[in-house]
Image 1 (cartoon, rainbow, N blue to C red):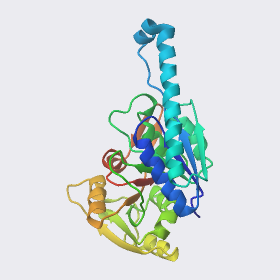
Image 2 (image 1 turned 45 degrees about the vertical axis):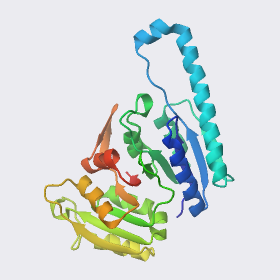
Image 3 (image 1 turned 90 degrees about the vertical axis):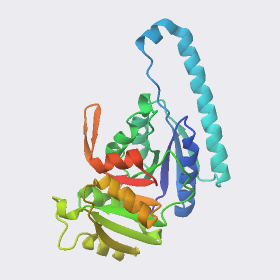
Length: 277
């Protein structure tokens, strides 16, 4: 298994260029095709604004959308050409970002998206939550701060022996095989209701070793600290440049309910995080 098609979500925010540059860098490593999907969504206007603004307001908004689209495509061409630019594809969608990404993700191996930002509004608000459950592919979330020209040299795998964690490990194998060091850490295994086996993490460590992954297995118990905070602390301690973890929670109508560690990582990630559900 390898990543041969990488889908990166683009919008009007400046961090789109950082995500795109990272996707291009990964494409170079994995000999992959990059699909840039511009799906900015829209902000919902209050009803009074629509009533007062009428056609003039809609014309102004449409003109701004066109300008944003042109600028986004210009940045896409600029970044991809700087990174080779041969195996790239530009797509646009007027659908809401979650729907647009879901459709294109069906034909990709990896989705690159942005960490949610506090100022997100309209269709971008809650996008990360939806992708966790509905992309159907591993999602690599890139923090909204910092630069990440490359990643995957030192990887921390958060392990709890659950289905989601197992899915994440398998989805991350292209990264794990290339890494110089992979640490699988079982967090608070003694408190978990899951069956870790006789030695937490031992079986998944053997599984990865058979895939030629340079892996070590550890366990950590953090009295008084939630698992999400422990994962971030451990990543800093071992100098990880990528975290791999299962995404937990369930979808309700118009509401996304995430597990505690998943929510913590989405809100406070310090390095890119690959999540699978």
